[in-house]
Amino acid sequence: MKDGVPRASRFTLHTSRWLWIVGLASYMAVVSYVGWRRLGEVMASFHAPSLVAMAAVYVAAVWARAAKWRLVLGADRQAVGLYFVSKAGGGLSPGRVGELAPLLLPGHRDARLAAWIILDRLLEGGSTILLGIAGVLLLKVAAARTIWVFVGALVVLVVAPMILLQSGPSSQRRPKRSRARPWRIAHCV
Image (cartoon, rainbow, N blue to C red; front, side):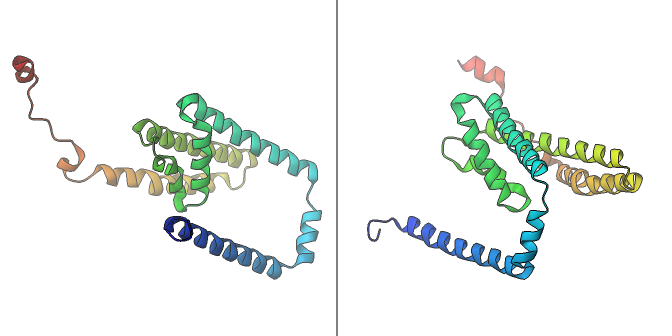
């Protein structure tokens, strides 16, 4: 401890400062490359009512998901806060693995929460896929070819890894049976 600040806090503050500096420098570099005038022209061309409507739908969807977490996990589990921790972690991590971040919080490391996070991702991913297929079919944008590419990607990215995870020596797939015999335990009591 130095100057009344724990060492871990100093590291976090120091790292946070550098992340802000790198983030702002990256943002300014992109804006400078695109140009302020061009950026202003594009922003002025936005259709404001459509932008407001899209933002409202997004906010409603986020809060509907938070309500879903509260409904499933219960009010006593701080479900809304856990949802936002999960959403922030997912947005900041590769492969959205950060959505498991609530499991890192003390008092929330349990199988029920882990199962819910995984099920929620499957539900959200499935609904996104269904909406995407519906959009492709409604817009008829090279529908047949796009659906075949989608099915191929689904097989390669989802089905094949699941099959590979299930394959392997049988000792890895099945838990070993307990040597305890229930009749012996009951007899001893």
